[in-house]
Picture (cartoon, rainbow, N blue to C red):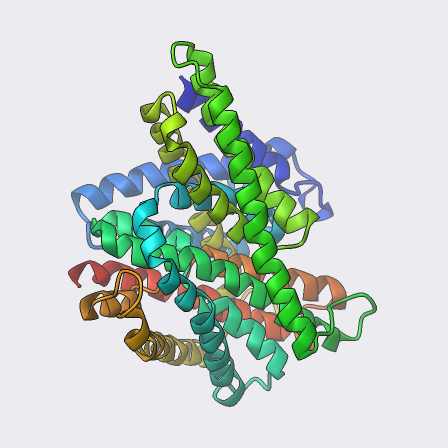
Length: 460
């Protein structure tokens, strides 16, 4: 009863956040309810087929593919039926809303389910891979875009592109680890790294996208950074987000302590409600109010709660079942939306085309990203093999190959595309063409890593 009630509440709350009032969608607002539940129905069918017939493909990869097909269908046919209209409403979802709605629920659960003892042992490894390695990856990917791509991108734009692709996606990676049944030690290595490096990558993205946006010459758009102010901004967002996360985590532990009457069923429900409430408030306050890293805040909130409050949970089974439901619903919809948005770019219906040459460079980029990931992991291997949990050579190989990209990167690409389009107002402008290519590349890398790396990593 609780799970089914939450499903309805979650779906309706997501729909409220969709901007269904824009002029191009002057249709019945309730059409918006169709897309998310149509996607969930596809998810049920997809999961059934995977578990019976097509076990080699990850669930999230297939949901991304189905979303891509829906995006292409919407852009090519653009019909007036209810399903097509509903797809269009969700295809235009604001990127900031996309992050705020999906990331807190998914990241909190991942952080809360970490083995705290192993996480404490591996924290220096994770920090090494999440900050110096992400910065190095950002620079290397930027150099690929600057010197190999024929687009003539500015270096600031290339660095923004690099920051989007430098980090692995915690949502995609955790889904892969769950599906392949990875051992706890390997989960800590990869999930801990991906949770932290996603936060650091978003910080780098904030800085370099701000520098790029100043090139548009629009007053109030973008922000200039020197080396000094850039470092200060990075420290402010990282440490500020971590501090906010610990504070919200302690507040949540206090709530769990107060709601500790196990024999009163309603308090068990309130404990569960408190966890998701604090997770979303933590992300919102950190990201939108105090302008720090919402991802790092939620990670620290989840870890703090697990370390200090796990013994205070009245009904562990209820808490676990609730969060597993949240994870499934959000994962299914997030990857479908990511695919849908990418599908509208590669459909080549509008002027912002992604042509055969771009596809060629996309495959070149994929190969180079795999090489860069291996090079970075093994460059840092002498260090990470000696500190914390001391990664083995086999773990390093899996970490290198299992570096998936996913919907988080697509959301950042959507954000940049949206800002540039609104600033220039012309889909055929130079800057809109730049973000279109970037968008196509980011979505393509998510697609290729989910299908190729995701479907073959289990063998390692």
